[in-house]
Image 1: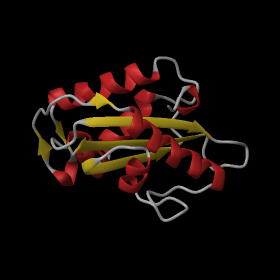
Image 2: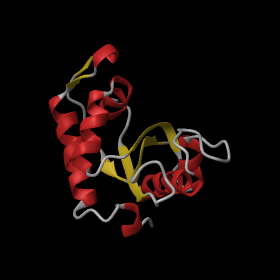
Image 3: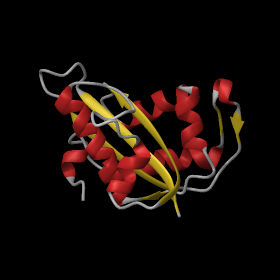
Image 4: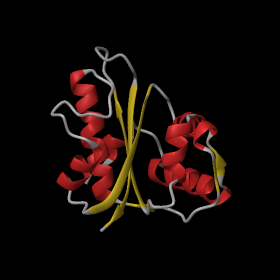
Length: 151
């Protein structure tokens, strides 16, 4: 289980994240070049996807990089499977530097590709982690959202 280390010390992290994502999904969204998306079903919080997200955010902090590809060459699907999530489809959003759930969600909604992931009707589950950077890191926060649908 990811625990409080995965929240950047933010209060009500899980509730805020899930409420914000599901409010976007309930309203539908225009995702720039990715097009407009109608309302789609709410996502459920998934601890395995949160663990996969934490592993990736920890990796980015530990080795001071920012990429969808892990230091071992892993992708989000591989990290989700390693955490015990048996998926039929997956997606990932990453961000760095945002100080709050609200600001990271706004950044993802403003980015066409990230917005399309948030609005993807195939996804049913979500995990999210935020890990605080250190004085040696480029960013103060490293966010990973892993989305999926179980097989």
